Image (tube, rainbow, N blue to C red; front, side):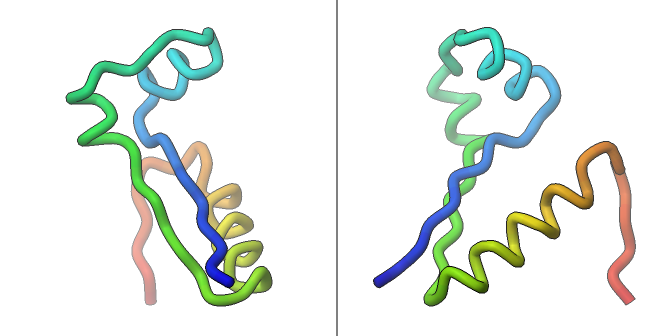
Length: 62
């Protein structure tokens, strides 16, 4: 079984989602990403990492 996560990136696009507005096809193409994982543990770890990064505009992985 594969586990997937769909993420919308971009401040304006996320605001649209929260306001129940539709994204344009161009916005979906640029700002919607789908990730797949082999295990639920991998999916949950990925989500935790994404949640930890909210609010930071830059990072450097060492």
